[in-house]
Length: 334
Image 1 (cartoon, rainbow, N blue to C red):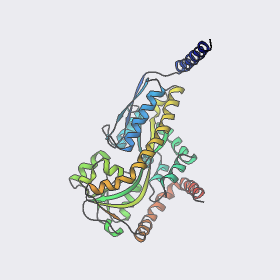
Image 2 (cartoon, rainbow, N blue to C red):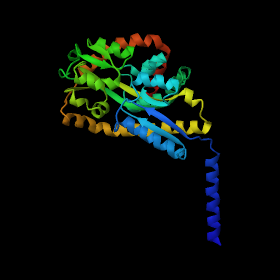
Image 3 (cartoon, one colour):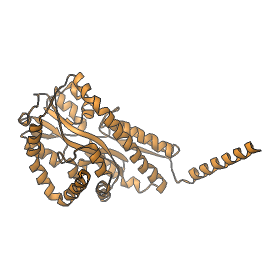
Image 4 (cartoon, helix red, strand yellow):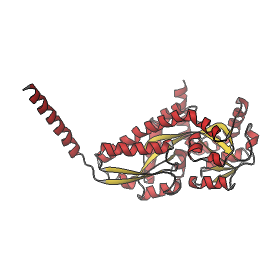
């Protein structure tokens, strides 16, 4: 009798769960997620985890197809497609969104964040949410922040042991004004270039070098076409996980919750993967033949001083946003 009662209770519970699931307003949909880095990179791993979470939470009704390696185009092209609704999702350097909302330029300021954990606190808090909310007017929905990490410089011409060694190098940069200006401030030659074009440009010596986190340099096999790597940690890149507002507005509340929750959950996983991998990535690049140099504390201070006027210049146009960010950082550093 007791066993029968237990079975009855379990059956009722199962029916209740099924009832909740069936009550959810979820349609069969296939969503495209495009990103620049190749399969195996922590961002691609995060995107794959996002697709798995969405499928599980939707009972398989929502399917996310991940397109890594820039196959859907560079960041600018992908954002445009997202605004038009032909690509639903992308994850990209938050600073690139300055072309849509100028305040995002603050995320590309050199030496803004002292650590990844500090950046997490800022972007996951009110400051980061406020900036993402500003994208709505540009047909973009900001759902979460992931990370790329701290950027470092590589080139094929010479080792960088002092700031003056950067002068004269032709460096690929993310196509936005602050990145162009900080390279000019070091007497180097900035070359804005879409990421999918970068390997070929390095191989053909159309540019001398580039700057990216170790994970990007490793995953994209830049060691094959770059000999010298300088550990500069000059810039930290949060990544914005964004969704097409045109498509978002057609989703039910249940679908929006599944996708939004999955973006945050997969983002936590992506950050963990990225940070756990970072420790071994530099060793792998050394084994791949890259000659690694590190700037002395004095040279690092000189680098900061050379880039300070660039921050002042670009900060003037978004003064309120800069002040807000600096206030957040001051609270965290107490």
